[in-house]
Image (cartoon, rainbow, N blue to C red; front, side, top):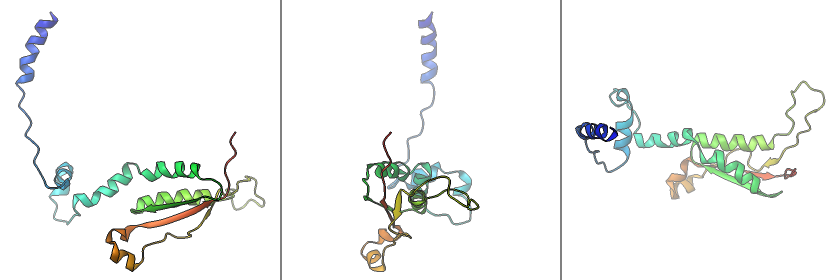
Length: 161
């Protein structure tokens, strides 16, 4: 009985029309453009090229910084320095928040007269602000224009329980 059902289903599967072959393009921009919503493609307002929106998609989908920073921090010894270069503002925000969180000491509310949390900073920020490339560096390497460098020094290592 199962063979009879399979035999009748097989011709129906073969009868489906084949999908049109994918159009070729010299870059991935065509695929990104065709995958975007129709209203975004046909508006009169000028939009950036789909290839330029890729970094934002990459960061929003999950950044390597979110995974690599804690792993790199755990590997550092006391006195070790962690430096991170980010090329996108969202990546830079993740790096900054990670380092500032490690450098923050007391987390008690400001209206407490005495610290009751006992928290001490794990890091000392080496660069208070992000270090940006100079005009000469950008002239030598235009791709460095969006880069930001942040660094911190590890003050103590957590006790292993």
